[in-house]
Length: 461
Ligand SMILES: [Zn+2]
Image 1 (cartoon, rainbow, N blue to C red):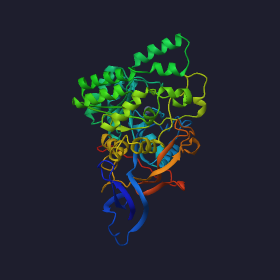
Image 2: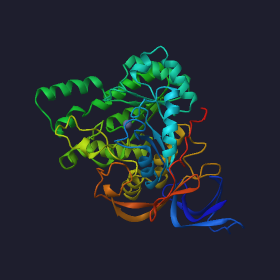
Image 3: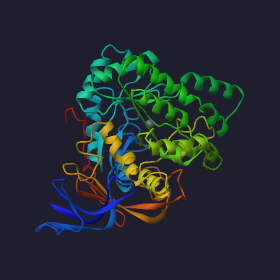
Image 4: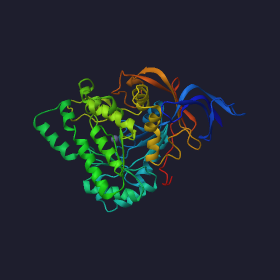
């Protein structure tokens, strides 16, 4: 047993904190004591240096590309970047590994490959591509994935991946109903495929190949139409829907309205949507290309408000880097879509969310950890610094300023759209189940393989 002493904990009331000590045994928190209490006899103290202790962040949407696309990212580098960014649990997507995680066998294979590489704990999404739903054994495969502990099923209304095709709308209805029977949410990439296709054809016919054209093709109402169609299916078929990577303020508003109307729907946004607008393509070009695409200043500001007021539930990075060579191609259409994100998630929200006055400290904890833990059935172990939970702790210095340098990031990709940005608030140490995995003096100090698979509660391990 040890005690993390001389730390400050958020109380859950606005920006308030209190001095505390956390007693940790066997990787779990066994007691949260007052900061002024005398240390229990025989307990080894670990000096927290007066730093702010937060529940380790959860990034519920990453693409660590293992096995299969490891020239872009791999689990070892991705999870080291997570550790350095104060992220103690990642939830990895099923669509950018090979084989895609659409069967229990594929999930077990993935676990066997990524487990020995993991610096932080990980949960997994199951995948529900259109081809699976069309297969008579598809339903059986979904049941197998649920039993294996996936947090939900990822599906696309519009997919750019040959190995993971989109669903037709009736298939989404079917998937929502199957998933509901298994007690799982469907995570949906909700962009209107027809609108994107028609606009792309028109741009290509006009000979356009520039960043304005890329931004125009995926501009609103692409997201709000996709979200509206999905909400209509949710209304008709029942189930639980989670809209991934919302980049449009109108789409967030539709989710909020549907939830108030009684539907089981949640949504996430991403740091890139909160930090950038389409005007930034002028300087960042391919480094900012994602799907959905970043939108207007009004969207960016609306997303911050939606995050603060609870319309949006949490933040995920959609971390999906690639080698610079896949960004530096001659055609904007051919440029790989995806950004590095997991390591800058918490620092960005600390700085531009909390320190900038857009989020309270308690809301910061909610959107970086607690809400995702609840949505994905991980809350018995993750998402809070409380007795019985895993000792996943990040110590931050809220006032330290630092400048983001891509070459200092731990991801396989050494670039970031946040290059040169100065953040206020720095991760000093990260603990996963009581073990130090990152120290900002020594770097990533954990061993790959320390990270464990965390099944959704109710699944089997
Ligand atoms: Zn994604």
